[in-house]
Each structure stands twice: as C-alpha cells, then as structure tokens.
Image (cartoon, one colour):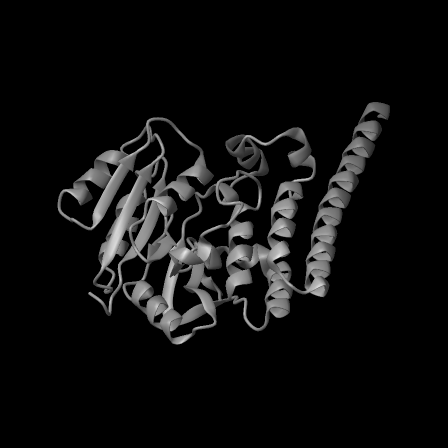
Length: 288
C-alpha cells in the first residue's frame, strides 16, 4: 500500500483490564487501512493480557509482547517505539480512545504540511469532554519554543501525535526516566518542526496515566531521588538544554536557558513557601 504507508500504534499497558477493550476497539475501528497495533504489557497482574489476546486471535494487525518483569512506564513507552515496524508512529495509552477518522486525518494533514513534525487530534479528558485542547506549536523555531514553555501543561495531546519514526531518532532522553519525560519528547519533536492539529477528529484520554496521578505516586513509580522531588524539573532541564546544542542561534539557546531557569525557580520558590507555611502552622499548633 504505497499510498498508505504502515502506521504503528504503540500501546504500553499495565493493569488496564477496565479500559483496554475500549482502547483496542477504537483502534480497530480506524478507517486508515494499514495499521500495526503493538501492545507491550508491563507485567500486569490483572486480566489485561487475556483481553488483549482475545483481540489478537481475531485480528492480524495486533502484536503483543509480555514483559518478563515490570520495566517501568517510560521504558515501556520506549519499547513499543523501538520495536515498531511502521514508517509512521504514534503512542496510545491503554485507557484512551480515538474517533474513527483520527489516524487518517492526522496522516493527511501531516502529509499536506511539510513543515510539520507531528499532527494530533483535538483532545479532551474522560469526565470533562466539554473542554477541548487544541494547542499547537507553530511558526519559526523561536515561536515554537515560546509556545512550548507557555502551554507546557496543556500539551498532553501533542505527545500522542502521529509522526515519522525517523523524526524521533537520536532523542537523547528517550531511554531516561524523569519528571517531564513526555515534555522532553514534545520539545525534541518541536525542534524538528511544527506540531499541528487535525480538524474534526478527537482523542479522549483516560484519567489513569502516571502523570495524571498524585505527586507521591509519580515519584514512586519513576523511582526518583530526593533532589528530584525537591527540584522535579532539574533532569528535564538538563536534557532540554542538551537538546538545544543542535540549535545554531546563540540567542535561541539563551532563550531556552532563561525559560528553564524561570521554570525551576518558580517550582523551588513554591516548595520553600509551602514549607514555611506548613512550619508556621505547626508552630501555632504547638503553642496552642
């Protein structure tokens, strides 16, 4: 299918028995004709594998890999990317669902925009579908960087964009585990080109992702050191600034440095102020 190159959809899962059937059904209902669905089960202890195998038995587009042990969420995301066979790739979490034209629309829009590095559907979150996220990282490189730091907390949908696999080759942070890993991937793609949205298709994201949970859960799952819990974006900043070495303009590298400095300063300031408030409240309680 020369006009329809193989698109691989990587589905990293862990204990997703409540949602994976809906996710796989939405992928199998896509109108794009040449799909590979690669599932990597990260040592699930529920019925996830049984459900996935029931889909696999009736569809040759599905491949399943069962990890011998839990390799961590980020390594699982990396695994499906590394072992995909398609020229194009996108991730899909085990609690997400896509409208039937999502992949085909993203592919068509991506093909029609040579400046684009990736294309994603408009997205919302389960339970609050009335709020749609449409943020794009467009314009020249400086504009894309400014937009990235301005809207970083609302770029979840851009991470799940469709892109040419070769676009992400050489991403230095792909195999690392740190807070903001998905942001680093988005940033790397944005260095390569615009991240745009398609028109009418929609992706609905579940609420069970690691980054959507509590900070305590996130720190535990990622196995972070104490310094990363106090300055959570320190490693993220290191990787992003390292990526900026490919940027020719010293002015843009300086812009990246300043934005990272502001990000970390704001977080540390919040941590310190929060600690002072808690200490003051404890003091009042002891005096009382």
